[in-house]
Length: 504
Image (cartoon, rainbow, N blue to C red; front, side, top):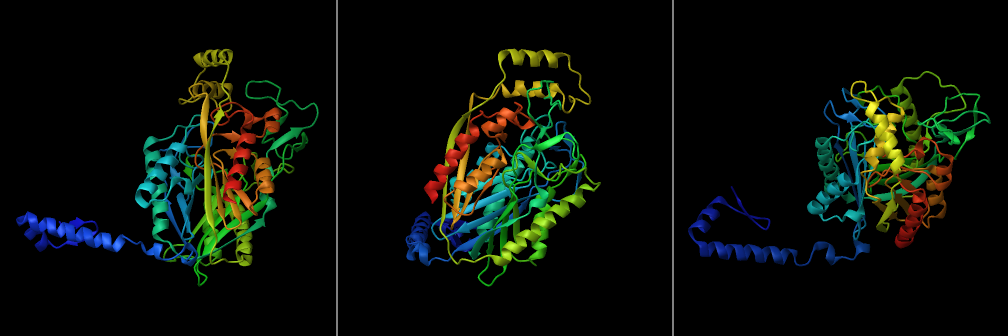
């Protein structure tokens, strides 16, 4: 075995002599230490000003596909993974302006707890020195990914959570290792064909019931497409496709981050792992850019915007039969075409300023009352299970959620984060954010353009606006999927604006 002293290796012969002569060993250690100190006393980057250092970027992807048998998030009932349609990844891009380094990670997962993200960021900090506040990690919200967070009747797998932690950190570390001189640019496209608001007002006289049979809701989530009972959507959509891109000085693609405010395509057979349209987009844009088999590899990322109340269903028309993965590829290909158009028009910059800011805020938890908890316990005491599970959309599922939610603290911490990349702004929110909030952030942000990455740095359920809370509907029903205080959206928006002002 070679003896290593602060990065210097002694030969086997030297080690033998040193072991025979402790004094000599001490001299050699002192000499080695002096050499190291002399060579590192003035870091290379300290010899030049930040403006003189080259802008650099690096990207990498780590495979996060689970083993068979891990529960799949995204359904009211639990499904165990039995097949893999396409591999899942944690994709990372790292930017370095010579003074500040930022990392963005997008993982093919339905949702990921803050504890997992924090553990991964801690590893990155220990390995590379990159501060946690300069790392943005998010989940795409594929509904065919392994359970990394417990919601409804799918529980997180601790072994997979540990594996995911390691791979998230690996992706960032490898992206840092791949840092190279780069150019950067951004732009905004639009793809309105695949995004619809899924919360609908129904015509007068149409009965809307919640899971308990109450009739207080004013809107219905995912009504029957083409139904004559439909009146109008209860909110807007955001068809924009923001794109952040980096390439080498000679024009070789390095990475592309896109963003779209659409829930997921879905329809994937139960028990099948898939990255949904998020992964299919990454494959397609790589193909369109001619970036296959590069060294280091090109990496594409598709992050979820503000899609808490939006999906890809055209509710005005009865759906046409279409296989799930055919539709996934169709949506992904259209988005990739749009992103390619943005890429071709990008104004490339040899240098931009990078900044980050984040803040932890405390928000109240909406819990069931004592009477409601007693009702839930009474219901579950006589409820029957099939294959160990309650019925998918029955009140038993929500009774169980109420009891589990009662174990939460009265207030929970959330990390809100913003990045400045040149004149581009990115907000990161740990919720399934309603589209109205995303549109307001874009409108009022001092950085233009700006966009939001949801399910970032944690998972705290749906984020409706106070006005949408009054309308009711699935996204407001109290459960681990929706539990923040009614004014949470207002407080989060104000925090985002405060942070944008800091980085502007």
